[in-house]
Structure formats: C-alpha cells, structure tokens
Length: 207
Ligand code: GAR
Image (cartoon, rainbow, N blue to C red; front, top):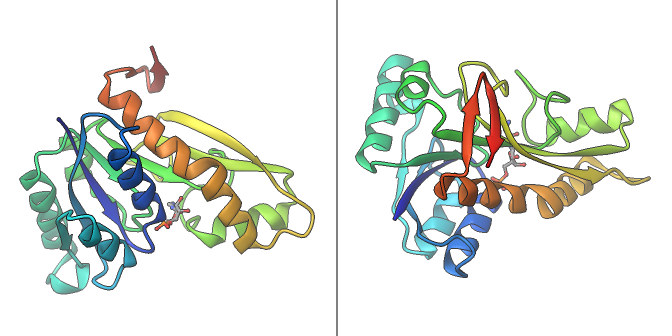
C-alpha cells in the first residue's frame, strides 16, 4: 500500500475527491493513513470521519511557539509513516524541518497556472479575485512538489480552465475545482504512487 497523509485547513473538497477516487478504485493501492488539520472546525475533518479515516488537529494556537508547533506537526506526520504528504488546501507554511525530511515527497494543489497568481498571499478565493482583476482569459490549477519557497517547487501537472464573461471569484473557483483541481490532484498521487514521477535539476518529469 502507498500511504498518504492529507493536510487540510478548510472545506476539504480536494480531500473528498481523493477519498472518492480511493473508494471507486481509480487510485489503486493508495491508502489515506491520516488527515491532519490546523483548524479544529475544518469541515474536511468531518469528511474524513465519515469515511473512517483518522483525523488529527494540530493547531499553532495550542503550542507555546512556532518551533514547537512545527515539531508537533512533524511528529503527527511521521507517526503515519507516509510515502507522500498531500497539501489539499493547507494554509500553513510547511516548515523546513518537514520539507528536508520529505524532499520531493510533499505535493500541493494551487488554484492557478503557476507562476501566475501564486506566492505569498495568494491562496483560496484571493487567487481568483486577482485573476479576474487582471482579466486573464485562461486560468487553471497546478500540482507541484513543495520546496522551501512559496509555490516554487517542481511542477508535476497543470490543467487550464477558461474564464468566462460574468465570472465572479466564487464561480471561477468552483469551475477551477471541478475542471482541474479535483482531477489533477488524484492524477498526481496516482503517477507518484506508481513511481512515474522523478525530479531532475529542479524539474519534475513523468516517465
Ligand atoms: C483549493 O482551491 C486549493 O487549491 C486552495 O485552497 C482551496 C481549498 O479547498 N489552495 C491554495 O490556495 C494553496 N495556496 P478545499 O478545502 O475545498 O479542498
């Protein structure tokens, strides 16, 4: 079995897509060992519980310092012995201590075509607000490995989505999720679990 740990902060629709793909057999030999949230009230935790998946809350507020929170997060991840860590709407900066321990074994889904609309401050609805403000006609989503920067790691898969006249950030967010995020995040997990993704000179390739 290929063990994954999924880190979440919110609604968990990307987590749901992974759960569905595991349950319907699209993601063969993949097991969601644990879901970790930095927020106790994240709906994603309810989704996990509904499917019998262990959920754990590691909130920075519960720890006296950021370093101690970071260590607690690493301990919670290590305990599940993951082959891959999946950031599915996880809005906490992953500390270097975890990135070093899991080099090229952490992936993130970002709701734009990186390097557009990414980096510090670009998360969730904000990304779509900025895309609409700039007037781009095509946006999309990206799955990438996580390195020490913000959205700077090797790109694994991207999928383009058209912006339509009259889109609001909410409408665009939903289209990007449906047409791109929910598909490519599971696809990346599948390819990695099958050993088909490798990184060379900072660039990810699919064999
Ligand atoms: C998703 O759109 C994801 O791409 C985004 O947060 C949303 C979480 O939704 N992530 C980022 O913006 C990371 N920079 P979900 O909880 O329903 O999966």
